[in-house]
Image (cartoon, rainbow over the protein chains, first blue to last red):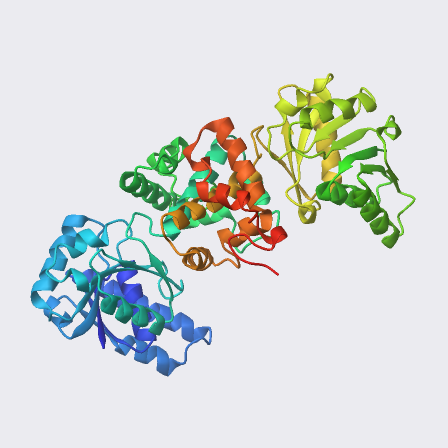
Amino acid sequence: MKIGVVGAGLMGSGIAQTCSQAGYEAVNYDSYPDALTRAKAGVAKDMKKLVERGKFTEEHAESVEKRITYTSDIEDLRECGIIIEAIFEDFEVKKSIFQQLDAMMPSETILCSNTSTISITAIAACTNRPERVMGTHFFSPVPVMKLLELIRGMETSDETFKVVEEFGRNINKVVVNAPDFSGFITNRILPLCGKENCKMIARGVSPEDFDKTMSALGRGSMSAMELADFSGLDVLHGCLKSLHAGLKMECYRTPLLLEQMVESGYLGRKSGRGYFKYTR
Amino acid sequence: MFKTSVVVGNSNGLGVAMTLVLAGKGIDVTFIGDEAARSEISDKAKEEKLQDKISVVNGMEFISDVEVAFDFSPDGKNKKEMAGKIESCIPENAVLAIHTILSDVSRIAAGTKIRNRVIGARYVAPGSVKNHVEITRTLDTDDETYKIFRDFAGIISKDVVDAPDIVGGIYFRLMPVSANMAARLIMEGVAMDDIETAIIYGTNSQIGPLRVADYVGIDVVLELLEEIYAESGEATYRPCPLLKNMVQAGLTGVKAGRGFYTYK
């Protein structure tokens, strides 16, 4: 079965790479040729690193790159049995692409979305095949992070679910069943902890003291404050905003310190300052 | 040269006492605790051949010449009174370091008469005593007490951090957050294993929030949530009803053989 991936950004490209690494032929579509060039180069770079580290043989790396087709012609997705959409987090944009795919793809084709904030049921309702639509929520970087949250819409059929679950296992992901609500599972808990961590800093605890405390029982590879800076405080900010908007639960309200830091451009490592300062 | 006492030992108190004795800085330690704690620390001291460095006693009349006293008495309605009782047995200029998880430090210190020499010292677990301590200035802790105790705490623990005077301090203010939301997700119909798996693989950890809660104790998690919620009114800490049900049913985790999961 060929796997189609709509969107050649970080997530889409990573999903296509993951599929190919597991032996699937992947078609990575994006309407912007520049995105495709970048995606292809990104995969090539990753393959080179993996060969250098002795994780992949040169043959395997070559075959991974060969199995991914990059295209800006949406018609090239026709042969795919499962299509995974990983484009901009906007309902109207997704609605448009799902309607396009629904119109052109055979009726058995399964359409999945990598959305992290939009209801799968709502996306499915834009099509004439809601029973064949579900959510496949990957984690970045996709080739590395084993978790895959599977989300059924209200009308997703058992058959569709079985096929996608099997696909998830075939690409060596650890699959979990998540409900169709903002945050699914992982992002109901982790951003909440991130938010409470931020509030602790706002009370005057230094990030250094904070990290020392949270590793009192044993240190992980990266401490909580370092990790927050690494992923980007704008990511936490965006997560909390969509959780609060989607669920209207007070516990997801953005803390003032986070608003201040994001508004000031202190987004973490990528902007040279977050909880810690970084020299370029 | 310091003498110190550990009062009403529990497992953290034992950890502090032993670490002090093992630090080899010539500190004489008096340990006061219940029978079980006293016999445990006596055995440990004999093992390390340090039994003459530590006095294990039954009553508080033996601490009238200490310089630093630790109050590890259990949290609860008698905690404030106990702080006052210990204070009355130690010298007026001795530092009194209070360990509490379910309260901020100031409201316990309110049970003492000479407030400026009282300070908070929170240890996360017996196994972390050597690594880390949270020290907390109360409304009245003076600079001299802070400095003396900070230096002393550094003899016991590698990292000494300044923690705000709130229920739970730093660590225990944050620990119940994931357990509470995980319980909430179970109430919403998510499978327990899916929650554990999602967090384990989403964070590259060895253990998920439900098992962590089982190890800490569901009753401890619930008590913490109730106290933090009473202090702050924050929705994050509103105790999930599932946790109440579990505690009422005795499903308090590893120590009961059953919590979210079952343990031999």
